[in-house]
Image 1: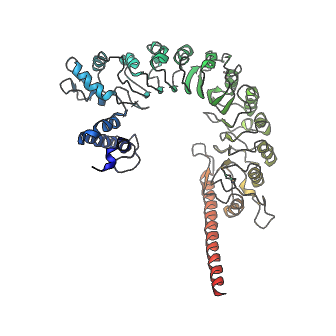
Image 2: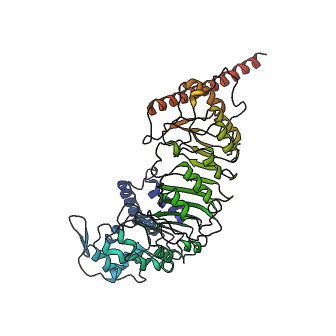
Image 3: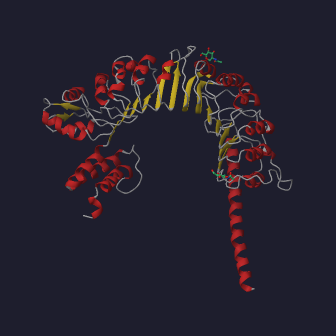
Length: 529
Ligand SMILES: *[C@@H]1O[C@H](CO)[C@@H](O)[C@H](O)[C@H]1NC(C)=O
Ligand SMILES: *[C@@H]1O[C@H](CO)[C@@H](O)[C@H](O)[C@H]1NC(C)=O
């Protein structure tokens, strides 16, 4: 055996990579079951090949399970049988010897479940309960660190407690039925901080809302909690969120159409806050009693309202969620706003955001910005000199054509030198011809390689290419509005922007060639003298 293989750390690295990269070195797609089977078989063979490999190979083999079935299928063959519809039935009482087989593998599992499969697979509930009866510390998988729990049969509710161990750091629960949060789970979750005190990330996701009291009991005693995802009824009192000390990220969905209660949620700082709600107005009233300075803010209501309503909510959020620490803001809606002039943003809509000079990322790609002209855009971005990422109006098609022109784009590039990610709808039919005074003399951004132009109208690709490549010389990609929200002429526009790209890459190639031949001739000349 090669000396390398005597070092356990190296063997561990190699074996772990069999799962991640496969035996042929290609990155594994975890959804690829045939692949996983091969990887498992290789690890099982390795565990038998050499005594020093055994534990390391078994650890790698059992580290991640989609469901508990493989563990139960390792038990002696006279204990269980598999029916024609792949159900695992128990045949005789469990013995201590059976349990020690189970324990040997179960203690190696670190990750259980995935978001689309049942935790117990085809194991009959009687079989599960029989094994549970033997758990010494009421734990099936004592070293579990990550649990994704989507579905399991109703009758197995009480088993959840047997999966919440002291080493768990990540827990994701998707309620399989509406009664999930209200029946057995409250008693299990109220002891969460005792069962799993190391939890750092908890995701209680939809579609059903949880009782705020249950989530409070579940989360408030967790001292290491960093990230939380919750779906709560809009009428709930959320003041208890203030008691989550050390929280860095909160994603909250306020479900329901009832006007929200005013909660007093106060914290000194959040790295990221994401709020989903019914509409802009309900988002605003939900947070009317909050004081939550955050670095990244995302507001994503289901239904949009007029630009005036958006502006009004943004004003309300000042000193509630909007503080000087703000760096990233994303406003979006689940159902696109109707193509109506009242929904188009104006300079006024932006004004509540214009005092945040530390903004680095602004994403308003879902809204119509056709009413903004070059001067409006100029004054907006002048207040955001550190901008690195800007997306305005690019997602959908709007009846009103954009007023912003090439001049506005150039002013943007010159005001925000750190820009590297750009999406902007502008009127590309009015690009100055190359013979006229060159716009944006000296403005060049080489960090932008991809440009989302949304439904920007375009007529003459060559002219546009000449003008654009002067200010954005490294462009290698254009995209137009999404196919689902596309408007008339989308295909033609997409083709024209494709032509722009061809012209740009063609000029680039030519420039490279002339550079190359230029230096060659100089070299020749030098030699001849
Ligand atoms: C927004 O939601 C509230 C309920 O929270 C409702 O009263 C109001 O009518 C909604 N506004 C619009 C414009 O749909
Ligand atoms: C590109 O980005 C780097 C750092 O991200 C920055 O130093 C540089 O000035 C940028 N260049 C341009 C032309 O924007």
